[in-house]
Length: 144
Image 1 (cartoon, one colour):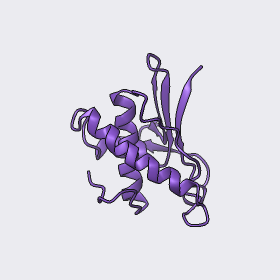
Image 2 (cartoon, rainbow, N blue to C red):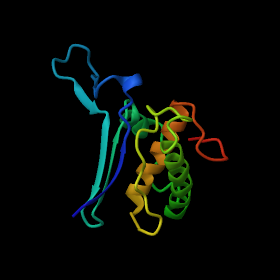
Image 3 (cartoon, rainbow, N blue to C red):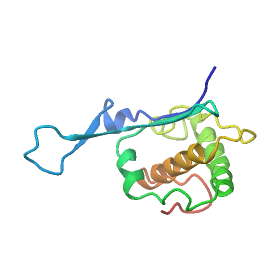
Image 4 (spheres, rainbow, N blue to C red):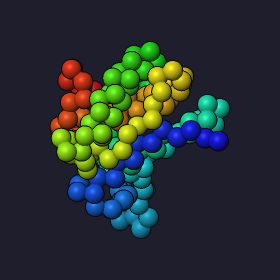
């Protein structure tokens, strides 16, 4: 049985329905390279996966996020605990916070060791989310 950490942000007001972006290095190419708006990291060994659906995140993580190894796993875990707690608080209060941004809670247990890749992806999604949607989930300003 797989546990799933899902950040499924289908931002209906912002993106409509799920989409994909096309990138072509040559405008004359008949087949364009596709970059999906869905990022999925699966770690069969740990039995956890992260699924993120948000327009632009794939491109952002490839082009703007700090490289893997920049932050320690301990740093990522501590920030993720803070971000997840605030995210879940907002998701439970749709009358105070935009329910299109905080559609569902995130099942992130700080007592489970998810591994570097899962924590890296979640942390960077929170940075991307805060910058893109002008939100602040913690007492510090997100930066790249």
